[in-house]
Image 1 (cartoon, rainbow, N blue to C red):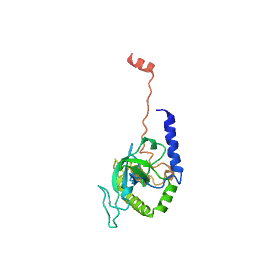
Image 2 (image 1 turned 135 degrees about the horizontal axis):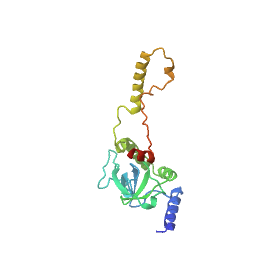
Image 3 (image 1 turned 60 degrees about the vertical axis):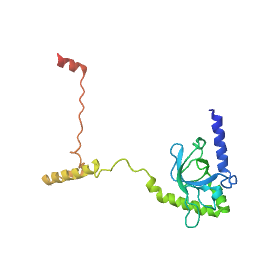
Image 4 (image 1 turned 90 degrees about the horizontal axis):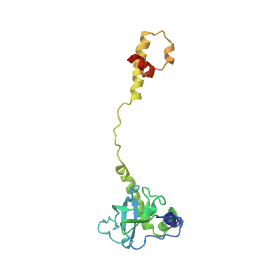
Length: 207
């Protein structure tokens, strides 16, 4: 594929993102979502709300309804098209638009969201609640370390051994005042001596 097509799509997405009045809200068949984590390859895990047609009604097939009669978001994995690559970045707690409940269609800019929340205050409360939910669940999503930290490292043990050696040495020669300026680890460090042999010396040894 030529680079002209990629540049055209990148320019189109950038213009859509920068146009403060270019997005009025999710269209028919589209729904709002909040990113739980950053994209993994071409997929991202989100909290997906019901489609635009059920904004004030009950939830869809998998959704639940809270005490206020509002559909709760459902955690799912959606597809991120390649046109968003290196153009529109998705991060944790970002608000996005999902088409058909499966594919990321658009990411509103902060100015576009401000205009949308001013006209639809109910969406603001729902999305803020979803972002708080993502924030509380964030530590559980983070990857655990693949190693266990040891209790003592080499350097921490080295200082303690040096101090013990220095105390024993100072007890034997208490009158030596110059030991305070010496490195306490001087006797614990062993330098390996490298020996080099010439080919002539090896021949003489063989003879």
